[in-house]
Image (cartoon, rainbow, N blue to C red; front, side, top):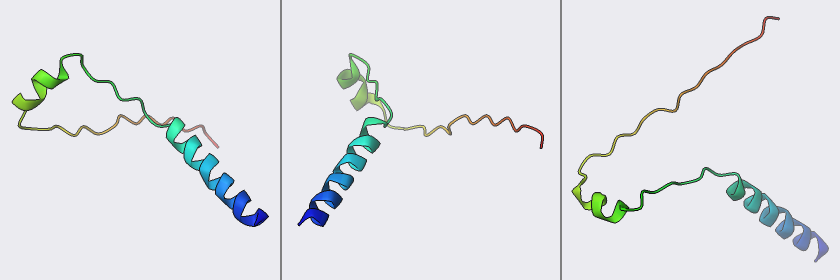
Length: 55
């Protein structure tokens, strides 16, 4: 019984941690009026910048 409780709490805390660190979603105030007018959705790549240090 203790093993089940520990696993359950571990998964619950992991799930909470993963959802708390998720991205924030921002929506315009008048989103409901703009949404029906749009027919195309653009999926843009995330900008990634990597700076490597010399070995």
